[in-house]
Image 1 (tube, rainbow, N blue to C red):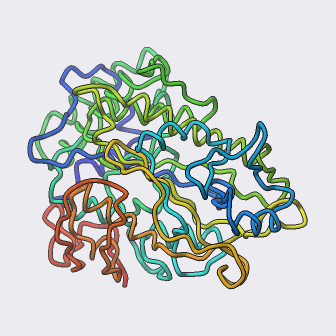
Image 2 (tube, rainbow, N blue to C red):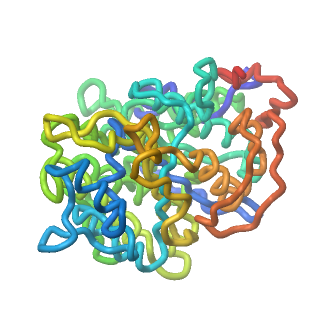
Image 3 (tube, rainbow, N blue to C red):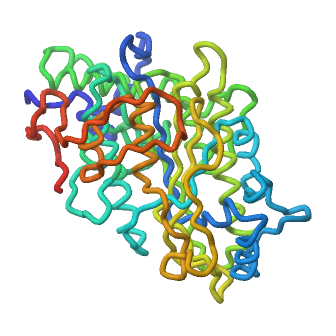
Length: 451
């Protein structure tokens, strides 16, 4: 068991042994450590293919005419009560995303035009897999790009209670291979209440005493698991009151974003978190300024704004200064609406970056919507590789130079300027270092990049 990760035990037992611990912990949560990188990266994946063209849309010029011609039933108007919200003279924001406008105006929200990958895949499964593995066109990769970041980050303390969190029932592909990920749908379900209630205290005491009898990796892992469960049960729950008057949207996404805020404030070492929001596969009855798409866009925007507001305190409570949120989808939608007043699977899309060290604005080349400018005469063309955006965040915010291991085969580091931070010299080698695994020895890992 020499290569056994303490926190990998937590993953395997989060629905069983780890969740039996119910006694309140008495030690302080693990806060930032001197010399470590304390940035929290939250990846929000919009499952189903978000229509980025209606999210940030042309409001003037030749592209406005192309847009109105291609989308007569689902276009967002430029005048009236449901008009697009101007970002500059050329582009406007969908009114369903109004909650994001103040953050954009404050310089905390960056939007990247025409981002994606140059693999033309219209399959949800394939496109999501390529993005989350971080190796477009290669399906044999056996670890996710976030897992490889955590594996190569030399600036993290060795003993973090919960370094990676997946809000949901499963570990996403981006964290595939990370032994430390905790998957949690709801805090009140992060437990195992077996048998009559009169047994439960005895069960918890017995489990803790059992793991305190020895100091092996397995026993230490058990204590870590029990501590994490205790912390979640004691401090994360429905009684939480958001700060700064933040109001989360009703429904599961709002609840999950609220859990994210609680976990960040607890300072248990969280460095990477993922959350999904579906409902974007709008093949029919998509709507324009109102309707199905507008409703889910409103949920997304209000959730993002609420989380930022909740974490935007002062002094030690200003968690936004160590927060970067990235929003992406597997692909965009076709430029032209279909006969069912919806849009079919497309190509390039918008990416969003939100955080305390984000340089707000619109970034990346805009390819245009006119004849000869569309990819395959149907879709927004990709002009910015998604890895270019993520590499900048990895270097400047996460201070991890090991881009070769995180995005094997991609050796471009050309920051757009979406975030602030020092530029480290990128390492384009593909070695992974963590927990004693170095120079290609992945015996303690579930997988390694297969490229």
